[in-house]
Length: 530
Image: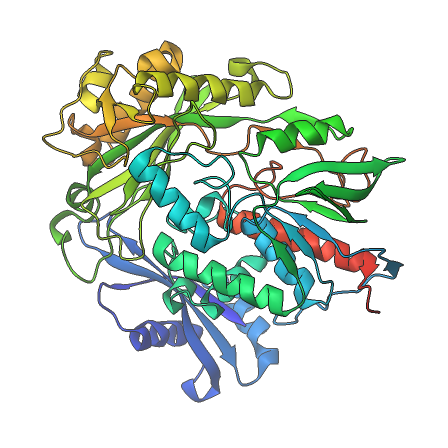
């Protein structure tokens, strides 16, 4: 297959016009093109006009010529082999089906791949199914009644279920295409396959997750919701079973896909001898602007053109030894309550597929590491807890969130004007000087970042934008060290993976890490039925 990238065409160009542009550049006669299709579309507004930037895939009638075309058109075309990798089935005998702990993106795809290959995995998830979980989360948003097992962080689909379903990633794993195709297969819009920054939307993602679960069960998996991991039982340095929901489940292979907020699991894993170390992460606030202002900032005079999507942004700045950046940007979205334990306030953001809300929001976060919070394995966890408890107290100890307008925050004082943006955090906000929560040093870094961002995206210069805190679950605060065979240091048969184990950040990288972990087990063991 040939891939042409960097094709610039006018806004509104049709798929056929995009493909024709690639064919013309290839120099191959149309009758010699077997198959052609748009692969990715993004938008470039850097020069006053918005243009499409596209990539196209081409398959030639004579496949052997594809590499020679790529060689002749270096810089314009890339050759990608179509040879599918055949999964090698291992020879070792399993005494019991593999166990998957956690049913977020890593756990979902690990279980799906194992089930597809006949391994009949057993999944344990402390939270509820997506149907029950949605009702529980909605109840928290309206009443402040927190369920510690099922919430924004825990339950089927993981934290990403209530965070827009963003499928952008910086990793370059060919499995990313498989993940996107799987989402589409189970109900996501086909546009995901060509969007440069694909997102499903929280509303549609819930249905997709349910459909994948039903197929995984049909293939032989057993999925246990509302079932908490209680212990991992090890003998002579190897996993023998897990205890969950009061029952002992035998296992030679346990995939640990627990998510970035599974603090009790982190402690449990260290207790059985695995190596757990602190990992850098980031903390900050959610910033809200009017989506119409973001559109004007990004699209200029073309803002409002129906051919353009709701605009987004991705900004970063290096401030001293810290990085300040925007993260998890949600066009047309809302700020949500992400607490997973009592006495804590945590913020996150989400939007539905249409991204039609009045406000846009994103995290504005500053990087922190052991120089900020200490070198103990769980120092980052304790740092998160302190910030979240301080935010809970500042909000009135009822899950309201502390907030400030940007102008007041930049001046180092308390203040909250809402004439520009009406905050969307569901349980309400309380005016507070946010520096008192995060500390002056980190607050000063975020201030410097905001001033820099205002020079790049004009809406950041609006003093009436609202900051709501605290955003503290940007990634896992620990890493569970694993060897080249993906098994935990000192514990054979335990396979830490995904964001919670410190090896991913977001839906796509978590999903691919889950797949790759499942493939390692498949390559070592044969299914029980063989």
